Length: 198
Image (tube, rainbow, N blue to C red; front, side, top):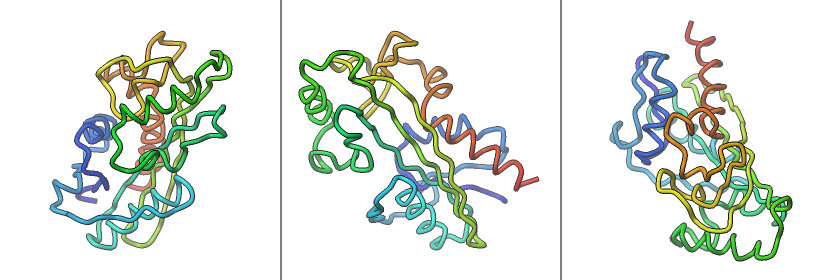
């Protein structure tokens, strides 16, 4: 296996991914690095379906091992919304400042113990022989009362982690890789790949 393509163009995400997968000793390329410019329609009903759609689409284009992720925020009080629609919540091109404000506003007056939420991440691996593997992990927390921190993106500034006493956006990169949903799911996938790449 001479390289792995990760089906994303998000450079912030790629930093995290390369850091976690570095001991596989295989170059990990983003779609941009690999010269792939394609819009993938993520029309699955679950995070698993969307991650597999992305990985399989790019694997079929390149013939390489491709990893992809899909993640979402589940807010218990909102019946696990926005969930699979996290990126498209309130419209795909709506800024996360607006999305975050909407969620905080919808929880107005809701006490801490009912503000429970989690980030969920699914990683899919699509192999050239058609094999598909998936892993799933979560990071538990609760919804804060305002945006805080500048180290994250998306819903990170309103996702409060009681054990750290701060939001996901206030964690260092090392702390985030350790506890994040993507970090956990990626490490699970790394173990599966290690076994297969022996």
